[in-house]
Amino acid sequence: MTLKQSLTKAKLIDNVELGKDYYVSWFHIPELTKNINPGQFVMMESGQYLLRPFSVYETKGDSAGFLYRVIGGGTSFLSRLKIGNEVLIHGPLGRGFTYPQNKNKSILIVAGGIGIATFPLVARIASENGYKIKTLFGARSKNDLVCTEELKKYGEVESITDDGSSGRKGLVTELLTTELIKNKDQEVFVCGPTPMLKSVIKVCNEFGVIAQVSFEEYMACGYGVCMSCVIKTNDKYLRTCVDGPVMRSDIVAV
Image 1: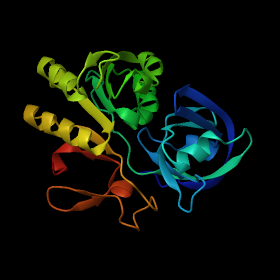
Image 2: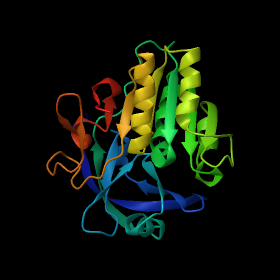
Image 3: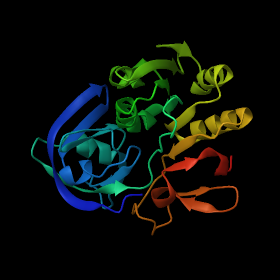
């Protein structure tokens, strides 16, 4: 975990609508982009009393983008910001993904829903460092398959939807099983809603694969004080914000 954190008033420079209810908000925040590790997050002002956690979607120069779906007051607040408005951003926070030392080992990204938000930055950095990448993306419907074109810049993307409106109809664990049958020697990076994460961990356990899993938990502080984001492991509870959000799948109780 980086110790180079900042608490900054960041200026909105662009708000891009990717699809119905999906946005990427871009902020000028060089203090963050200089120190971010792929998979880390920030706590961001969102028109409410507490800051809220957001994954870093991508960086461009001195700017960082945050992908989200408008589902409540906080995300609605962000989607309505005007260019030049400022919000308080604290980060980067938490532990990100660790790339394999062997660059011949391919990276398999497994994303569910808005869990895809953390992976464009992860995939770009991996690609720039010579890793082969494939993304498995599970979503409710075609409308929820956002940023797939961005990820296709770095490798193959295979999608699956609950309603069959794009790709196969089914769950992302079905795609994962097929991939691991073909090749278990892959570095698996995962992010998504907790039920999906637990299902993915069970599949990985069946194949003897240790994945790196990024948990999406509610947080009130982001730096380990409030204890609102704990995850049960095999022998204790860990705080997602400081012990994660990325954790090894073999320590998580499912």
